Length: 110
Image (cartoon, rainbow, N blue to C red):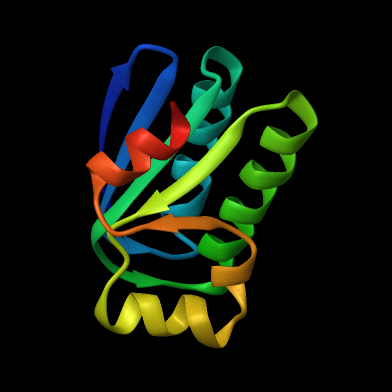
């Protein structure tokens, strides 16, 4: 897994590339935690995410819970193909605001 991070004002954007599984989920969790410490909004761009395991979903849920407690928002962008199906089957599309593109996600967080 690779992460690309950017900031747009008070919004942190983290692009997740590759596989999010037991081995990589802790790293993403650390980055999400740091981003939520310094940002009012978090956009996770998942257009290049190839796979997500239950450990990856857990990290996202922990981040969403932490964001709610601090008054921040978490938006997902770019879900497609098999990854979107995994989110849908697991019921995670109901738990997150999901946008088609990074631009749509940034607009939703402004």
